[in-house]
Length: 200
Image 1: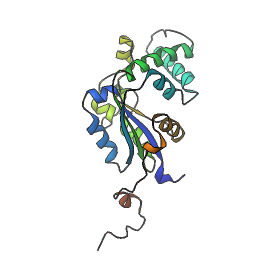
Image 2: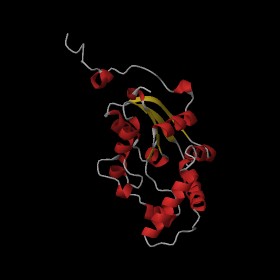
Image 3: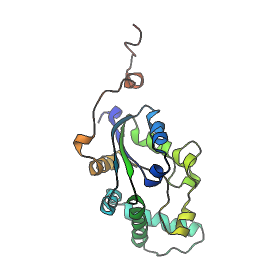
Image 4: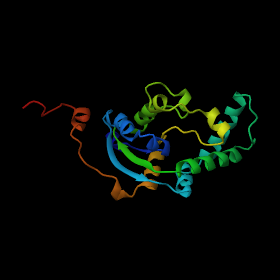
């Protein structure tokens, strides 16, 4: 695959839409030089949300195990010792959260698109996300608060974890016709080796 054409899936979650952060968040990705190849507003069904998280077959076990470890670090007894039981709770909370209102689904393209987007987006938990990231700057939610409330953490954005995951997620959310190939003029500044044609 051409490194310059790596793609990633980004979804602005219902809290990002409701808080009026669509333009601000898109601008953060756009200013890096990544190219927006697809965008649409969608209210996902709980079934779509479940299929989205299960594109990675290891996600249920990884998520449950991480959650149990996190409970123990905080000195809290996990609701179950079975990682898959914990993941059922997490997934039900995610289905309720993400199907609660409109989301903005996007495809971004460019060199290291997956890594660049994840860096700009920040860590999954807003409370521990770095200042300067989307989650670090625009929300104050935490795992502790979401656990108390019995809900998913409201962290504004989903970003694909790997190029393989991105490919599967893009196919889930977009038809091939919805993802555009086009030339963006500023790509020359990023990718043209000799910068030919700048001076007249």
